[in-house]
Image (tube, rainbow, N blue to C red; front, side):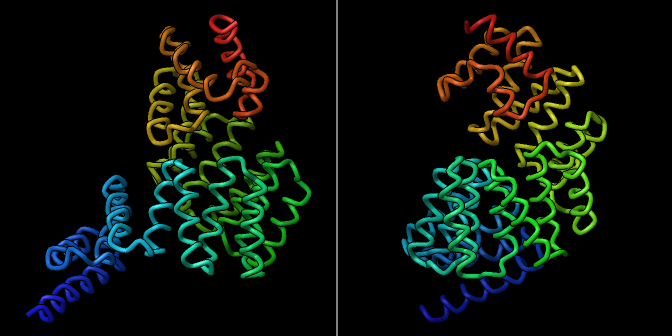
Length: 343
């Protein structure tokens, strides 16, 4: 009897996998649910149900699913990795690093996990750790173009622009057909203040693949820096249409609204970005100056006080502008807020 129950559960699971491959997520979840009802102790069933939920944007349920799969099998490397990817998406980089490290402890040859962990390290400003992971990845796969490309971004964050551009060039020579590689070089150009070149790389990336939200967010940034707020707004909206969870794009649109003096729209976007990524400083700072512009003084003060609690350097408007890549208008707004309530 048990044999036939397991056979039926596997049948539903296979049907679910077929639906998942066709992106028929509702059908996949229905089949996985049937499999789980028969065999609740199978970690793979829970893991793949969580994948379907994550693809539907049901991130809380996906996290619980991956966690339950890990509870059933504490050595389930893919479950740690996929849970870590959700933490990455949410900006919870500490937990992301923890899960990626657990994955690599179980399966150290999963080179794509080094790429994910390195990204988390970059977001935590731990650039040397990121560079170490990129080197391990390149030792495992010397022709991994995305590793060179991503390492270039990490080097740009360290201010080593010459090596950053060299890595970007190697990546493009290896894979001139990959949109993300041009997008990463655009990020380097943005860090360097070479906005026209960033714009050109974003255009090239869009020609190769118009489905990448980050490309449109980067192009929106380039347009903003070049003073074309209308095109910046269009690109940020396209990015958000492609990925409604991309907090940086939502915060970028909030910045455009602020510069257009549409403070209510700015405030709403900064609030949404902060809800998606509570550690996103640019969203909290933008929320503070938007609230101040709307006369919501106590709200503005509370948000800026939270930033100061994290990092005392937020008491310096010049440092804030550099840290957040803000132009003169937002820097002046931050300075006014600081001088009025924090001097």
